[in-house]
Image (cartoon, rainbow, N blue to C red; front, top):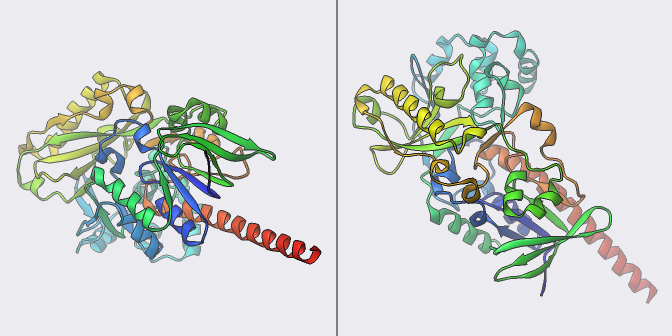
Length: 434
């Protein structure tokens, strides 16, 4: 049986849902193939991640609708919060401006941070960022680096990725397994054909280095014809899904990231400090030390007041090393106890990598690549292939996702309009010759 759709998106974990809906709104028949269940045994918390959502004016109404098609968000009243050695730093609290004014940050960094500097001033700041000492610019580097998909040293953070708008309203959510189902139903209501195949078996090719179809098995099976394809999996995810597909789309091989984020579930006894933790806190031990391991941990509340998810960034080569994960947990507990003496931190569960093998989990949900790996990322081998996902995004926040999706939308809509124009001209030519 041969199926068909001009545009097909290969998606997982909610990637690209807005793009699919936006293309369908343009009148383009669009299909989204969801392969989430084929990419490992992951609880909803690991799919959601520790990065939250910064609301700003760049998020459109339709993009906001997509976000709320999933589980609901809760706003953190005092915004994004850092917990440093000398105390908390809230980015939308009543003393935020005072804290920034009293800090050692350079005037240009302060101005840029609160959004008061213009585009010209911002360009000048970034051009001369290396002239500022770290004490006067560290927050700018952190705003680029903490959720970045490329790791670099603290003092070079602002050279990579994009600025996370730390002073915007900040929201987080408790993800559920039903969230993805709700969003897929929302897609269907927007006119997108949603398919969840047993497997993507193979790819067909046409002339001029183009992909012409996918062979699917499952409820809808057969050769699925297409004209444009958006591939939203990393190279490592692609090889895990189907090695043959990985070789087609990423012939250089799977790109293993240098770092990845892992999640512990931790129990904390009630005390003054614990009870005043916001929904989401980034705890940094020493600003000057690398923002990895237990020196930079994300504490996020769960639905139970005594349980917290604690995220940290570790080397990818240590993902499945139980001894390593245990050592990190002991150091984590020590750091938590230093800040909150009466909490008696206990590890309730280790990261998924502690319990499962690579064959069961596959690629990390939140990989972080090295600077030298940048040349391998985002390279498309085919004229009608558009890449998306962690290897393409500069940061793990919704603004970066939507920026890439808008760029892809623009290319596909332009192609679609040219296609319709050619068809109209051809039809007119045939009518004149008949």
